[in-house]
Amino acid sequence: MRFLVVADATTLERSLLLVSEVLALGRPTALVLTMIDEVAARHGSVDLDALGRALGIPVVSVIGHRGVGMDDVRELLARWSDWERPVLDPPTTGAGRSGWVASVIDAAVTTPRIDVRTRRIDAVLLHPVAGVVVFLLAMLVVFQAVFTVAAPAMDALDSAFGSLAATVSDAVGGTFGAFLGDGLVAGVGGVLVFLPQIVLLFLLLALMEKVGYLSRAALLADRVMGRFGLEGRSFVVMLSAFACAIPAIMATRTIPSERRRLATMMATPLMTCSARLPVYTLMIATFVPDRAVLGPIRAPGLAMLGLYLLGAVSGLLYAAILHVTSLRTPSAPVMMELPPYRMPTLRAIGFAVWDGAWAFIRRAGTVILGVTAILWVLLNVPGVTPPSDVSQAEAASYRMEHSIAGRVGHAIEPVFEPLGFNWQIDVAMIGSLAAREVFVSTLAVTTASTSEEALPDRLRLLRDGDGEPVFTAPTVAAVLIFFVYALQCLSTVAVLRRESNSRRWAAVTFGSMFALAYGAAFIAHTIVAALD
Image (cartoon, rainbow, N blue to C red; front, top):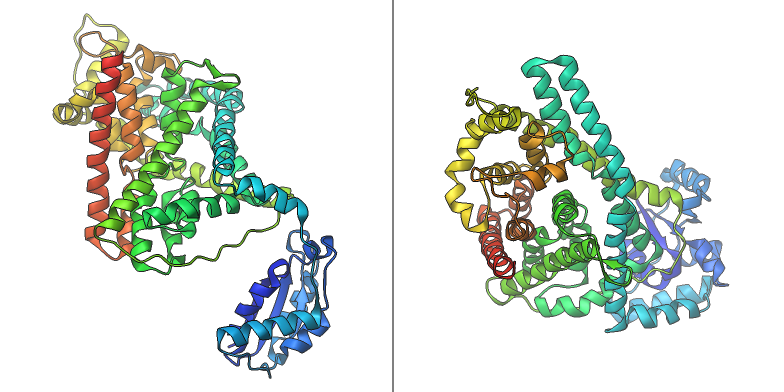
């Protein structure tokens, strides 16, 4: 067995602690130093030959994002059989190992100058008050941009999918044409119109990460999260859940404490993942007036920020309850790296955005497509005959209401009636268990035949059997709050069960979040109804 260790040259003192652990194993080893250009930019240097002699192993350097030094790495790997066992035996005690690291640094490294600019910026971003204000303002800018900048592209996609659905339905004709047009195209298209927002959100978050800001936010959050039984590593995990809770839950493997890891896993689904974004956007853009609240700050962006913060704060409180009850664990010191501020490359940003966007598209082309197809069938079987004196739109609504899915929606209507949900919302809620975005595609399918308007306009015009609007202000508030808390993703439940190695914890998480979602949605519905 041979080891190739990759270490950051800008934090070489800390990196050499890891190198010493590897050398102590006595196996053939080589070292690759990254970020060597950052060291040079701060007027420091690393003598690779001297470092190799001090460590007793071959050492090469690379500038990864530029591809500089990769030929040296390939050559090093090509002669891996020539690597020799290290002749050095680093001290095993903490003090002795630190002294050994210091001697290696003295022999091979010219220490870079302290980055005064970084220290001045960190004095603001890491301040317990100013840092929080900056973080909230940054998030507000992100969500404001998600609504304003992405709007033209969303409108164009919505128009394109609307035209495509009508074209397919008319060209094919009959039941199969309706299935393709009003079912698949309208359903999946109703989700894909939010792709510009997804791309923009991932772009802004990737910029914040690559610049080095999110690491500061994690350190800032560590001071707060310790009070809730979590730590900075938990913040990084939860932040990654903004894309998807599934890889975030798997990322909890980096947390050494089993109980803290479990608490983080169970709280992570409360973070606002990208699957919630289409639901939030549809409800907010349709029913929240686009008016200025404070200068350039507008109501939709503020509402979106509020939902994200509500999910994050609730996740912390949820973890705190676990910490003081069944998952109590002592606090532990945490070492976190604060990388230097740097200008990200287009390649790095592009990969980050592509990964998130492609995952969204892939889910729309697989899970959402399949569930939408099944729901369309359930919404059109059996083929009941509507009354003869109703309009075409009313006839389509009558057939869906008396379909298998419609009857299921009516059957559970008494359960959700206190929240203001009708059978169509109930059916969409059931479908969203497969993927939260299915809520949007289901509403697109159930209203596709009722009007030729865009989906937001169809929702505004949607009426119940008594002619009253389905989506009133209390109902919209209840839908949004329900999605903040409910674990409407069976894939996440399955991963939680696997990672916790316990059906009980997965069931507790799903059940408790459903109860929390129902209770919070009921309170929101009651308050808004009283104020409306």
